[in-house]
Image 1 (cartoon, rainbow, N blue to C red):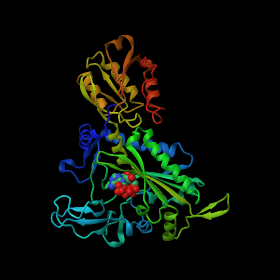
Image 2 (image 1 turned 180 degrees about the horizontal axis):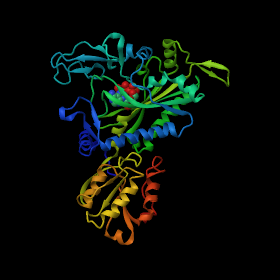
Image 3 (image 1 turned 120 degrees about the horizontal axis):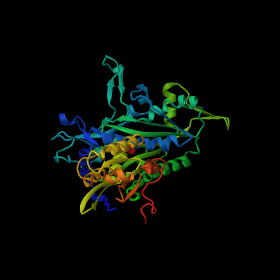
Image 4 (image 1 turned 90 degrees about the horizontal axis):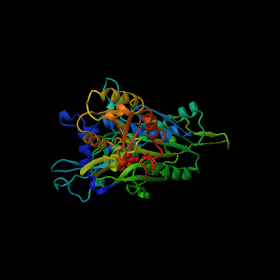
Length: 453
Ligand code: ATP
């Protein structure tokens, strides 16, 4: 692969995403809405595949994990107990000249980066979106859009533990939307005001937390590698003492080398017993745990791996983007992991000739029962391969006139561009083997035997 990280600039990704139906600016016909993006037909598939891959690894394949889906609006006391009302703020400064607002802790120097104007004193700005529940807009009816999904898990700790008869260590996972009124947004879907998180709270016996923390840091790092992120573009960064929240014992960020720089993809924190203790105090409900083995009662410690769906989508798009040369032309290809590719198979009759159509459509109808499949008969076969390469489709199935005689079709693989011919009877099993079970464990390509190497 001719991948050089520095060659992929964000503009290329943004424009490909728009052109090929991955991501559009929100409400674009009205001029768009700052930092809001809409996932198009291919983006919604990619995003769902990212969520599914996470759920599969974190919940489905584990005995010690269960999932929930809590409401976005929660009892306002939740955010008092969690510390968000008091402390979920960033330092804000405003330019006295152009009135743009900036996060003071992200500025180099004391002048406005836009116009060089003088900045105001910094003040703390709470990032939670406020709204009103019910028809009366008064202080008593204030609710917040959750700024993280984690608190929905903590407040359900006892419901989940008792209904599922869970013993420590066990975890609760959740995927859902979160909202932060970020002072500065940008870098496409990297930092937005509405975004999606994939969070786990893993509850453990105090004293075993450090071992579990190390375990989760490795687990989460490897998750990205297993889905095809290149090792040289991923790193771990431990938070310094001054960066840690006062209750956190330790924290690592999984960072990715985005086009703008290294930046956080996921944070993994050892939060001690802070959250359960706070909710027990503010709700008056006991959230401690009775350990039947040792006859002890204690508040569990928690390890929190907290990832962003949108940031992961961006990392997978950036990492898989490549340009190489095919048949003397530049080819844009997304080397997306098979499990993440929005479209798994494209069915391409050699031409629109009416003799080919019935067989091609029959094959298409069969394949789409199993996988997201596209049927494309417009333009030359070369152009159609390019279109599928650009959206990361792992396999193209071509039906030609010979197929009508010998009942064989051609499968072409995206990365190697190798083509093999095989009986239609074997097509489904071959695709199932390549895209089915193997999907999440390794990148499936042709074996040496198949390509005759
Ligand atoms: P940052 O330092 O980038 O603001 P954070 O440390 O505040 O992030 P966390 O509170 O740890 O972020 O949230 C966990 C994850 O949620 C992040 O690693 C990121 O993937 C995602 N996330 C957080 N804020 C945003 C946002 N504004 N837009 C998109 N994703 C976000």
